[in-house]
Length: 115
Image 1 (cartoon, one colour):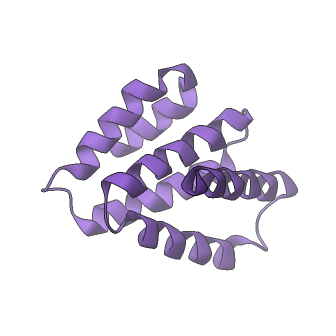
Image 2: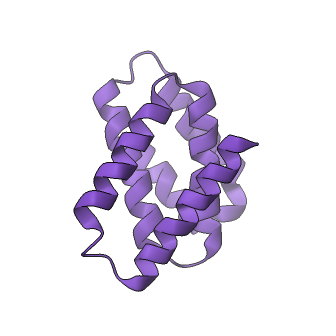
């Protein structure tokens, strides 16, 4: 469900509310496991880096992350740890466009968490 929702956020950016609410409902369900949440965080980061159809992708994924940070107590710590790990492991393998995508995603997250 999470993967489908994330893919739909990219394919249908105008349907952000619908898909982000579905993802939020799933991740805030008490039966949703911490390991599954960490996988969801990794998927978000990978999609942000490897999808460059428009800047809306990074904006919407960062907006989703800011909502999840408010909804889930551990999300921000998991997200930061995953961002650092991804950057450390992948930075030499990323194309210039993928680096730009990731940088834009970082900036969008920062802006949303600061406001």
